Image 1 (spheres, helix red, strand yellow):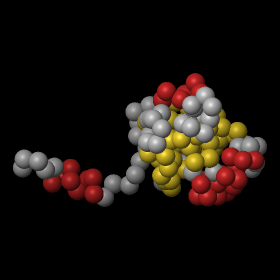
Image 2 (image 1 turned 180 degrees about the vertical axis):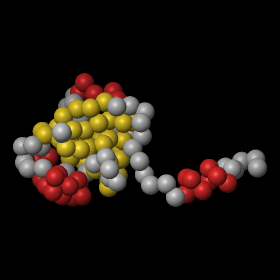
Image 3 (image 1 turned 45 degrees about the vertical axis):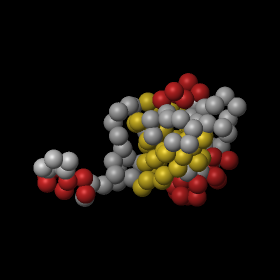
Image 4 (image 1 turned 135 degrees about the vertical axis):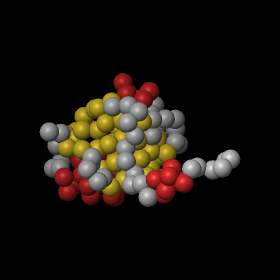
Length: 123
């Protein structure tokens, strides 16, 4: 039918669970200092800044790889003087940090698209 999805595609889209994109696989480490750990945000290193979207664009955190929880936020390029992105996850991300890490631990972040990052513990 013109303008519509075939039934098979429409059904698949309706009951799919959010899964991280696979456009990119750009890992970086984040040390969970006191502010990150307690406030639930991270800064993206300047050398990976170009991998993410523009100021104010939506950002989706995936908390873990297997059946991850998700947190929606926005890209903030005004918080850091060099314009690198700060990503505020808020209370939900802070609680996830506190459940899976100790203050001072390092987590693995992987940029999987310009608007999605997977957070997980390093192995």
